[in-house]
Image (cartoon, rainbow, N blue to C red; front, side):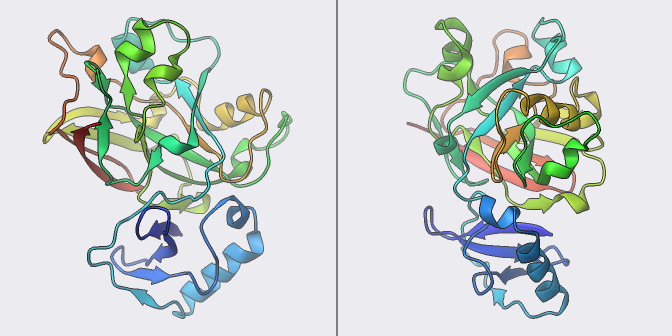
Length: 286
């Protein structure tokens, strides 16, 4: 299933994208929201599937309808840095021996086509297309004989917008360059895990002002999704509705020759992942 949330920010309603890839179906008569509570409730998800298969869900008029983040009330956004061989190489970094972990606040999450704000004083706002993993059941200390992917509710597109000067040159951790407002466009859909048989076989692409900047594949991840989920469960509890951004392939502005083409107000960024949909953001000054 492709689950999404539509409507004005803070007042989104749950919906489903029909198998035709164009028709929206209203889920508000079945569930209150697409959130961690729903994703952990297998019976509720089965009711949605049954209603969709039976053609019982009313059609939503998509005209002028904003698409919000596909998961409401995200608990935390856990991010993996330097997780593609080609991206580590372009930044001059050695491939990490263990996953590089940092957090983004949940309030950085916005809809896939919402405006991205360039922070005040920013000179190095950068782009990063990423595969987002959404947790479907509580994961803590996943055992070696368990399948980490069984804890995954689904997958989505994430844009890990980053301010490189704040991240790297201002001391301390990466958090200052990762947590500016609007720095995590997310969606358009949550594609349930049953529709993504191999998360290591997905193409990722990103364009700036129509020019292709990133074109990679999750097959190039240093730490694949299953390993990331298992690893994180050793250091924190993953709850239903938590989001894991799994890193970006090569092609970011930071890895380009001088003068590096960092983002400015007026730029348009578009990004997509095979089967998971497409985003488009216009940038404005904060």
